[in-house]
Amino acid sequence: MNKTRRKKLEEAKYLLLKASEIITECYEEEDEAYENLPESLQDSERGEAMQEYIEAMTDAIEEIDDIREDLGRIVDEDM
Image (tube, rainbow, N blue to C red; front, side):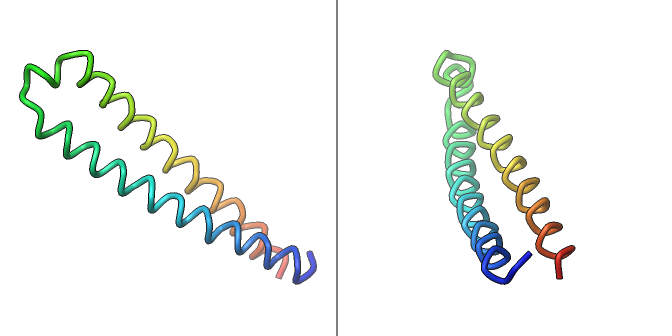
């Protein structure tokens, strides 16, 4: 792999890291908001929706981390 493509992949890794950080921040805020709901609201439709959002963000963070690892292997193997 040439320097230009390696540099693009490294930039993609960096942007994915930033995306993961943003999603993590939203995850933490949503999780805190859910935990601060009264128990009756946690069991409501709204609370269930919040739980789904939290799970979706967790999945997204894990997937982004996997992609970053894959890109890291590509860049590192080519050196």
